[in-house]
Image 1 (cartoon, rainbow, N blue to C red):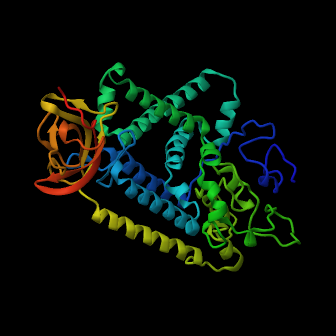
Image 2 (cartoon, rainbow, N blue to C red; image 1 turned 60 degrees about the vertical axis):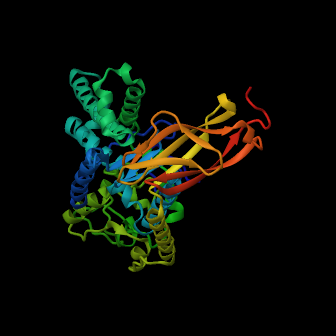
Image 3 (cartoon, rainbow, N blue to C red; image 1 turned 30 degrees about the vertical axis):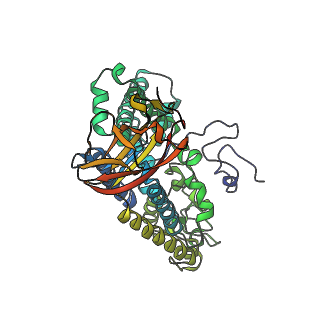
Length: 476
């Protein structure tokens, strides 16, 4: 086993048994990435503006008064691109998650972790929001390191206080954004405009989410990608020699050596001048020259830094670039491999099944359950009744009037409350009703009853339930 050092990059083999952000004594090795600029960073910035605009605008986009995107796990109601999914649509949500999972696998097999570097919310907020605020207030990496090591003076208190105040503001903003996706923007507005006591659960939820984001972006940072996120660990089973990643061209770059003026070099040297800038700009603190690593999020910072150096030393750019192992060693890039074909077929099958289920799903759905804690109720005139709960969901975009009828002879339906059930578009309704039968007609203690649900006179569902009553007993 390679011997560990305080700095894993002092020995090129230590990356195999050490994390760049953890020292030998177990304490954190704080990462101070150097500010980067270049082609990829510029376009990542433009792309991040678009994604952040979409992300913050999402809760406010509505169609016919309904959110365009809503993930209400509390009421088990999901709206995805305007389509509403209820608990009765669990099979559809399962297919949707399977499609997403297979797509992520397929995308990773072909393009590696490009999602992490370009579109992951953790990277977007950390690198394009919080990191830029830090650069603006505290300066570049060396200035940040010096400030953290300096004693607490007025200047340090001012800079740290200003930074964490802005961090807190953005964390609160993100916390409210997440809550808007979970419960809807109208409910969030209601929570923030009322005293905390009026909606304590919502108030605590907002504070909890905001506190988590402040903790992640102010302190936890790259550890979220290295320690918590499982996606990096999937690389070990998803990537192969044809997968495209941020890759160091070791064939061209090795043996690496710095440029020395007025010195005649006898041994051949590669294009890597061993400047170490690729390590200094890395937000997870790794050395990309060690090869593909779990900690690499494909942020392209090392590509921009290396290209800048290559231009200065008059050597071709692309020493670090998007490439596969096979393209580096053999100059051949093959994307449509057997694995890609297999995952593509699975993805197409899942998409076909999902579209079929969407096209054939019922616009109206209902569930009926017995009222908990009650069996039967004896009534006047020798009758007996059972109480039931009914849940109706209108998945259509039109109002629906629902009626209920019992197919058992002699069974009456008595609705509690309003005698008509009218469901507005894309809404859920909960009600109660009695099934009533003459006691003398009860033949078995548990009678199976078929209930018919109708909308505008047409049946849309039949539900079986049980009617409970004692046999051979009449109410005197």
